[in-house]
Length: 212
Image (spheres, rainbow, N blue to C red):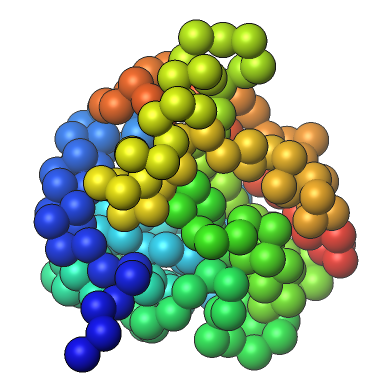
């Protein structure tokens, strides 16, 4: 049987531990902040080990979570939530959902590892209902000319091999802009949390070009 390119069982266990540590510090607070505007039927693209489920605001009534890695799905399936959660195997480039079928979307630490962020953002715009918004918490490349930015560029490929495809030098704000999103409500955060290579972060809300 051909191995699933999205499945990294060892990394899934390590990432679960790292994100658990993050829950106790800055990242946990940032998840709550990023999800503050979510409501109704929420799509989580790349559920990972499922820590986002502990930060749902009261306005969220249901969660649809898409996760390509079987190891991550096994971990996240053990999480409990006060809202109904449907966990689906799939990738962001081909979301297995009808057009205009969700009220809000969460992109949290996922655009670093998808094959094509702009294609994923196109799919997010397709499945989001008019007037919906996308909640964002993503680590991105450091500013041009910085030592950290050059280090991220140098280590991007070896890091991706050991970290489930994560690329620390993704220019995610630019990807949003290429996909036509309004990024005026995205804020930059520079705290180096857990893994210094994975900083700074973008946090906030964006709307796709067809959003209200």
